[in-house]
Image (cartoon, rainbow, N blue to C red; front, side):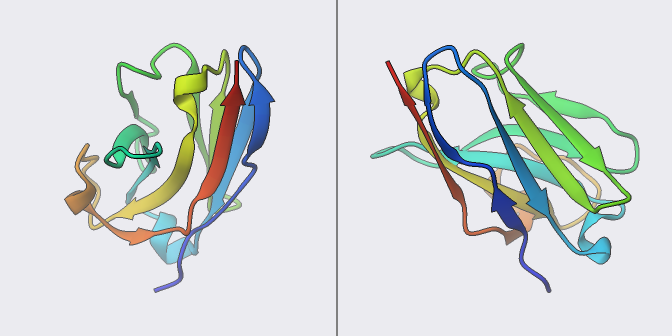
Length: 124
């Protein structure tokens, strides 16, 4: 299977914004759940947001709700994560992942196709 490819990471000051993108194959995108996970230094990888590509339903962890917006573009097989009001605690490697089926899990085990990750650094 084709691995998702993330882009858009970088460095920003607290309060700023970044937009991450993830491009996948059409097979990977259709009838799946696409998620963004993140792993901060010294911490476990955690789920941040998901989008069900069939229904467009979106889901967010409490830590990003109200600040991050996940969206999908079926014409491009692309999933985006718009991150606003960034905080230093958002600093992490952000991973795009595609689910095994259509269900949007909050657990890593629900996803079987992962990108390499993109670094996001938020300075105070």
